[in-house]
Length: 561
Image (tube, rainbow, N blue to C red; front, side, top):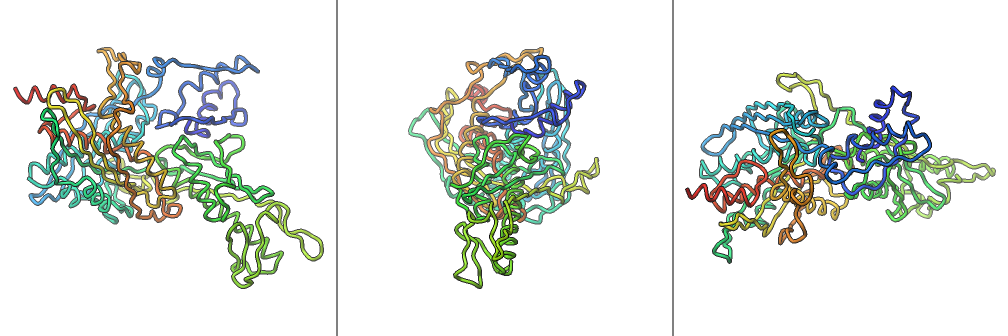
């Protein structure tokens, strides 16, 4: 699960007719292997909770088969996009008219939120003086649709970035040059009327173009195969309500070690490691002496949800504030007990030191629980317990429903660029990724290895989505391939020959040490850069997802005829 507190609230709402309140429902989050949006809401869990009300004192377990998991959980939305872009002969964008019609299935789950999020951002990371976006939620007889990594950005970016390549070809301009010319910059006006945050988009474009050797033609050693290059930009803002918030507690043990209590979920992305690093930076306690764990709603403080690629930023700020609060308490007690002005104290190597008394040092473990003994035998202080929270108080959803102007619905955007070298068999359509490069502006990479892991993993997941994964339905909306035999996913043999992650760092002013989230963003450019590479290799424009070998082979035959 990705949202223990929010899910508890949903459980309570469902069980309220039976007399349950928040104090009666406890969610203990187990370790989970990935979330990607599908574990943000409530699906099978409420079945166990409901049955448990009739089996008091007995454990209840609900197990779904793979087939039932396909049928009963939400999937990514489908979309039909109609797009027009006005552009001058020199490649300057003047206007965008983007109409998106979303298939939310039989009920919305998170689907309506996806539609709203894209309505605010379907310009992509480009500067447009004139903007018209209509993002429409439609209900169909297909399974309910909800959150999935990218939250609608992967879908609209496929159409937008494909179209930018078409524009470049029409004007006989370089696809990278036209992107760089129109790339949004700090201070440019966003679709909803507020200025763009600082970003390293230009640096990302340059870094990827250099690494992929853009403009240099690559030839295949096999005469039956051709090689193309594709390029794409990306951006995404956290899709969250204006009052989404995070909280954190920090408590010390007798040996000076720390426990951090938060309710964000670590799903393999290393979130808890980063929280420990943030606290360690402020309190000078090594990460090896900091304990973190998954949340328990009876014990851990509130967190909205681990979604939207926002917890490094939001919960990171809460942990930073909790560490600063603990440091302030430490300085207060040392100042009172040792008669040293508070502003002359600092922390270093798990000790309180003085800027004026060079010989003074007091290890944290000597007083963070038991206090400091004064000359008269009394003790000052007591257990140090840091408390921090964070809410983006500058955000607002109060915008004009017709124009989307007047509010501040998004906190910031994370941006980047990516490119691919793709080998395509001219007869079978089978594709092989020779090299893929992606640069993401993380603001500040608190843990560069984890950011590189996110880039690599996101690219692989994105390539799986565009090259293999295909859900098929009959005319009545029944899923035809609810298994991993017919729903294809790649194996280790399908991994690109070379993956190059690049980290750009242009600090986010309100992020912890300048950090912003990168989790979802890394898979967003996969589909358009593959489609653009197919176009470059074969002169064929694929306009629907997924871009499978079958679809490419049929397009080649059609093109010949």
